[in-house]
Length: 465
Image (cartoon, rainbow, N blue to C red; front, side, top):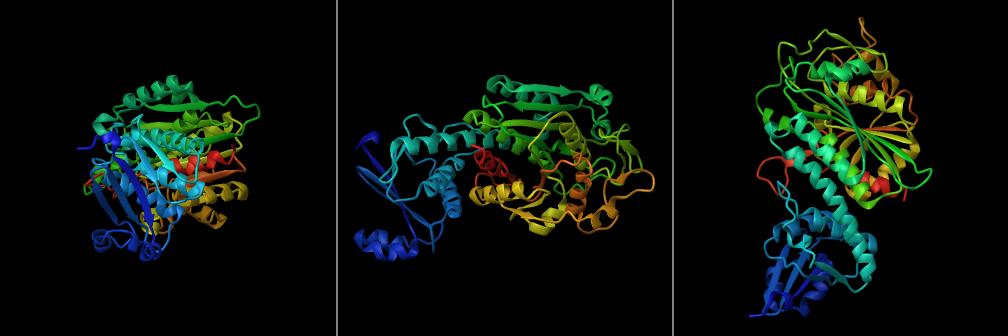
């Protein structure tokens, strides 16, 4: 019997057209059982070799290289060997990068442990086109991306009783120490003194203290651009007094999808020591029901002094984001500002799990994000910020209402609401990722974290490299 380290391990990628030409070079048993349809896998094992055949259907693209690479890696996690893997195809550098990222993204299982063969120090990739330096650089980037993405996914997947405010705060302190990030956090009392009234309103019904958290990553590069990130971090959302139905309520542990993306992107930047600066704000709380919970009809004052009439306590995410956006724009000079949030059911009804609802007031940032979306396959679709929507949130007793009374366009109304708290920042984007942060995934029987947003932000960061 051959030793594992003497077994040659190869991958061959085929479109149906390529396979129709090449199949005559292979034994009839392979021809019989493999036709190169999209996401079709076949293994041919001999004493000293294992060949993995992967089908791509009509064409090979960066999009399906990511997706199919992920599926292949997960499906064969128990049979792949922690040694050299030879990719027979001559892929471009961009195509190889997409495929390798997909291979590493497919190593995730909850909770993540780097036990997949690809995380072994003995694992390496070889191609006929790229040199070792190029391949190793791609692998390093893919690993850094996954270290960040998987950390965020783990937090999104944790049960509600395992991600209390103190739990996630301890984690954030740990990564701050590891990556030399600046860390500060305001509890409920401190948040009241700071004037974070919208955030405190959501937190006041909780048995847990608040943690309005600011993390800063600073590169060594002088005059590096500064990107502000705000991630919705509602650890569990009952809906508050406007309580949600019990059906699917267990999925509300996923209401920190924006924060998980921000955490992942921050870790990636620190792992790669990117030449950018990042300020990240995570307003950490849950949205609970109690005798102290805020009520519909309450009026609260946000950090920027604007008052908000509470119509629906289940529209809590935009309140925490309002103070997050107000705080970051008042206290930091930012080149670009991006917030991410599992914010509205409206975005889910509009796009399902195909893309995030996306808003942007700056064409330069818009182009960067659209390009990053294409490369990462974290899809976004741009929606309008027309002023006509502002009338939907005007109030008789405050500056704004936290939700429209009309059952239409809430993802747009929510974005227009948030726009009132960016202090006229000229380069802002809002991503409503309610339909894409949590859903059907290969590694779990039920809905779970997708990792959406981290790769998108990572690709954006690279445009400043």
